[in-house]
Length: 210
Image (cartoon, rainbow, N blue to C red; front, side, top):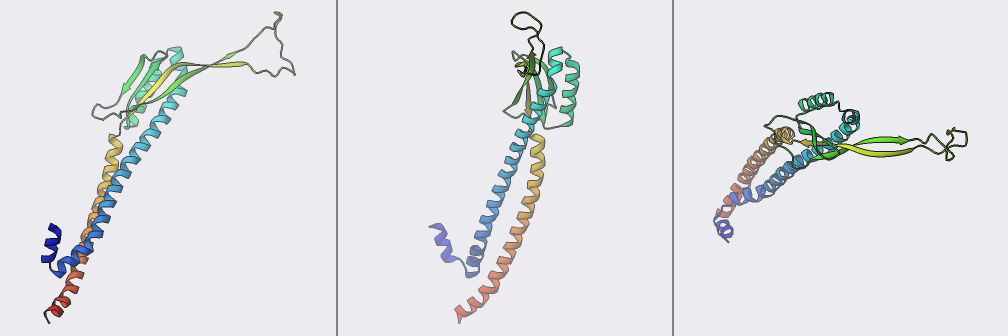
């Protein structure tokens, strides 16, 4: 109702500017909203993918260190990863009972992601029967195609906690550039709409007076 009252008191030029800028302003707001949420979604997807890959890779390469108890080299490797990749907040190596064995954290100023990424550290064991059922030594022949028995045992876990702070800072810088370009386009559209409204309103005003 208030808009309708103001609309009756508006001049022809102001009405034309309003009609011209309304769809432009809608497109501007829609573009900004979509751009912001697309940047946030990109950070979440990249963070999740990188965390899963990193946890799986560490789980496959740290089997010997966990079994042998040589945790010094494993700590150095994890520390190098944390210092190199600033999106890593914390890496924990847990034993089979989920007790902390090795823990390396990054800078305290970074925020941690709420969800962690875990991967089990598996040890493959091969069981070979060296004797036959009658107690004689087993000799493999050409007809013996039975593979040895393999079992998998989980000896620990790798837990990777990622930080979105560094990625969000990069995406925020890109979003600011997009926002500046969109604001510039909006200002140009508003200027053109104002000039167009004035060029069309003056002849209409003269015709109305006549």
